Length: 538
Ligand code: HEM
Image 1 (cartoon, protein in one colour):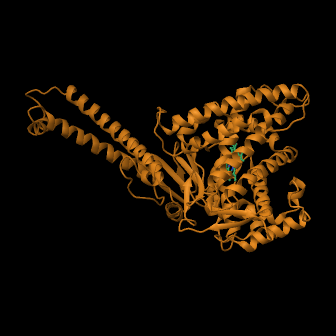
Image 2: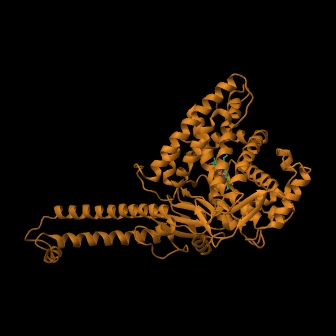
Image 3: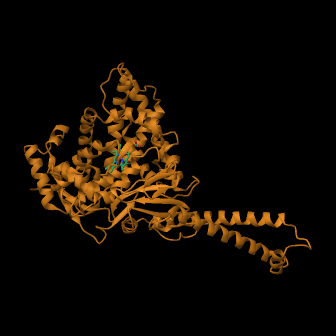
């Protein structure tokens, strides 16, 4: 409730700001015309007409001029929108100034679907930002794979929070080169080391879940988030940050998520969400910079790599390495921060829906358990390794299918850097926002029959429809900015679900909101997924 109230206050502020800026412009124009045209007895008929409507203080004339300017601006706004939109489906007229602002503040899957179903390309305008939505696989992929015409466009607040110099804002060749170095942090060898850390942290959290979730149903939303945060921080920074830092960063990180709304109050004034997120980032970056510093010292003293930062330091100090080596502590910290930023929401969404899909399909959960029993030969406390996960194709199909049915990221905003001839008969104007949808590709009935059904079996046949159409599986995006953390995220979700299946009996309290979707950048069940976990009996 409080959050909603805060949100609507913020909306009002933005609306107020915009209407203020328009009336300021109108006032400025009116003022200029008033001083430029000094009235004389030889004034034009038009002037006489306006003069006859003037009050003693000239207020009618001011009103008249303001009205004319406003009308001109409104006509201009509609004309620009229609010229850009041309024949694309979408509203014929845009709501003056704000466009579809209300929809963007309260996004719902129903509204998105309506827009996507209106055409493979459709147009919409929010605050005079002209937006082209692409719902088909062909156009979504074309946007993501045309770096000379389109590049990612993060929400306005992202630069304030991540810092403008962060690598995630790089594009073109500089981005490709930077990313090539970072890909080394997600090799199979590196991930094989991370899994040991993930296993240990997950079991530690489940010891706590066994207490917290055993007597009544609780939403797993926040505990799952904290588990992900703790795991990622330990995978990225190992013991280079103390226990209390993990807690402090995790606690503050929610403030960062909340500040990532599409539209936010533009000034980071004390009390605003962006301000709080910046304070949270400062705290996190201080710890992460310290971690990078400590990693460099330990690795210089000949220690074995025990986390992602150690891997990175070892890589860039290896005499045979030909890539860039001069990464400052601060720069390394920003990279780790970007990984946390990119992963937290999406991985939490993927994990929570993984729990919900499995608990609501007990026959599938039973098959996961059969596979666990078989591979672990009844020793369910055995720490998981990559090799063991390789022997669990059913578990992997479950994760893949869960992410398909409820993709954490349903679309990503890009912007056209120049006029983009996206189809034979339509060119996206330069400077437009382009939003490729992943959801439609992932719910295409020609590739995934009964697309809304959770059917891990569809992934088990290597020659089946799903496996034969990898281009449709857009959970991770596509092209030069495709998710760098794919294997890490898949492995983490699989591992957490497996250990939970082995450790607990699960029970789900279904509520009227269970099937409803809350969009907080990524997708979540509206009731937070109310679960009860008791020690496994069967
Ligand atoms: C279920 C979990 C996740 C999902 C669904 C997901 C999805 C995505 C998507 C859709 C993109 C944009 C791709 C594009 O523009 O084509 C992306 C980018 C990115 N993701 Fe993930 N992600 C997940 C987890 C992670 C994790 C765990 C990490 C960190 C290790 C991560 C790091 C990144 C980074 C750094 C980018 C930007 C890459 C670039 O610009 O080159 N993600 N992710």
